[in-house]
Length: 175
Image 1 (cartoon, rainbow, N blue to C red):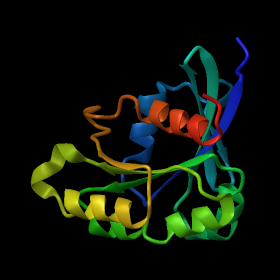
Image 2: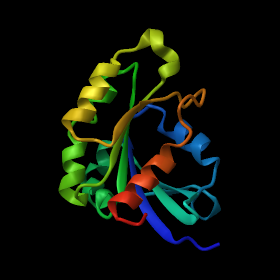
Image 3: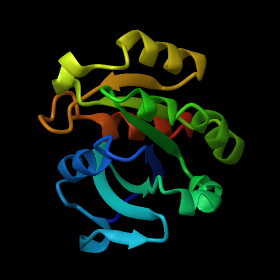
Image 4: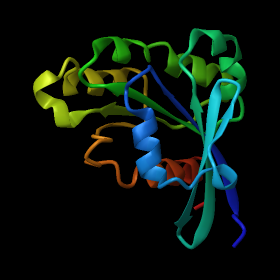
């Protein structure tokens, strides 16, 4: 079946926050054109969903955090319909890495939905970023929401892409 809608989702996070694990498990290796594409500073994944009887294709652009690709970041953001920002709950540096992204994303892509994910909830005893800090960041930056997950165990990972797609459709008045 041909998709009725195609949405670009930007996926950003510092190194070793669990982006690859989350994407691999959430997408179940349903990669763009059957395989993962490693292009200049970004890997593109595909996720097909059915929402209210409509087929939606999500093209997830997993942006490299390597400094060498930083000059291309604005071009990756361009045309995005939504963004997911991920950090490691056990690593304060990975949380701080995200601070400038909401403003930058909105400067380039406009008022798109942005979701914050705190990964590695399975390592609660090693937590370096509190739930309150994640909630405050979400509130202060007018983000779609904040969800704490474990890409390792799959805890609370189900439905994240559906949530994003539904919010895009609402924003674009496609419901």
